[in-house]
Length: 142
Length: 142
DNA sequence: GTAGAGCTTGACGTGGGCGTCAGGGCAAGG
DNA sequence: CCTTGCCCTGACGCCCACGTCAAGCTCTAC
Image (cartoon, rainbow over all chains, first blue to last red; front, side, top):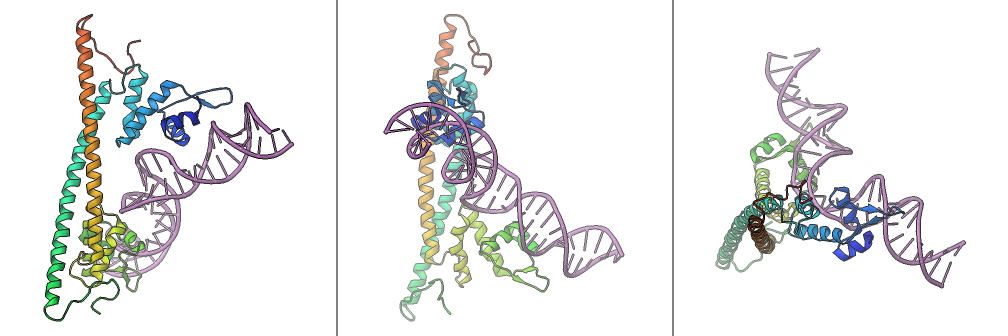
């Protein structure tokens, strides 16, 4: 099969396949015209790459899986190097999720605080004069 | 104060300040030499920007906060536009954290499955022949 | 006068994973 | 012959927040 068909069957683009080849990740045979030629095993490799990419793995991180498959193993993660990548990625994810959770809490508290402050201001304003819009970004207290 | 001092006091670089100015986020007055001149209020604006950047806000997302401060409000988040940015960011964070959590689970299950498969293979290998290392990435079952 | 520190603008580099031309070749159908 | 549709390589664009280098000016200290 040629590049367009492989791309379609994997739900990606020809540009992506050429890119992978340029990175040495998915080399292709060539036929007489110079057209790239692929077979079913290439489709497997490609699917492996795409799955990991969807998980947020970097291209280089998919390499052990691809090499593992090419070495004849039943799954891309049948090799120790792949397992190591899994573990590293889990650590990264845990760290990242924890960081994002911390940020989320901080932003949430900021929002709550700011809303409380606005409510207090509105209450203040309701007593002396009357309700008055504020902070219109262009016509403030001037 | 000049650009170097402001950068140092905010823990950033002169390049960053010039970049913010180029984006219209932190304009500077100029003295006779053409040197940029800043005052304490600029430091406040800058700290506001940096804090939000550390939270993962994009530069454009910090703009409402900066304009709010410049409008004379006590805090960068005293204005509705800032609160909207907070809320949007909370949504984004929740979505992202949920996605990462899902990925984390999937990767975790993949790792567990792959480790189990390896253990099963090792047990199989122990019965017929003897323990045998495998998948050395170069000298497989060939 | 001269060295050094700090300032100026302009412009290119970075990283990742491609998208998107530009310019051309090959094969089949009408 | 011409169109259509696929393929090729090469190269620039994108996003974002800057880093880094180049070439030159200003001010201070010695």
